[in-house]
Length: 66
Image (cartoon, rainbow, N blue to C red; front, side):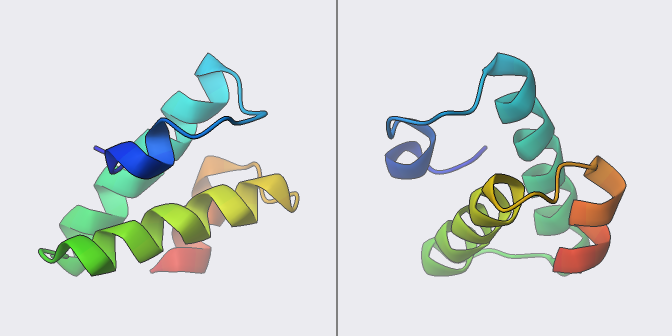
């Protein structure tokens, strides 16, 4: 799950967009086997930043981050 400080920030993402970001996060964490909180927090930040900068396709986000 996206770390709480990032998931609870005020965001312009709606529920469907957050769900998409969460799926990407879960997939990338699994593939890269990210275990540390700093690594997971950085990933969550990158996902949201990329999404807000126009990378809104789930597959494209995954390819960008793996």
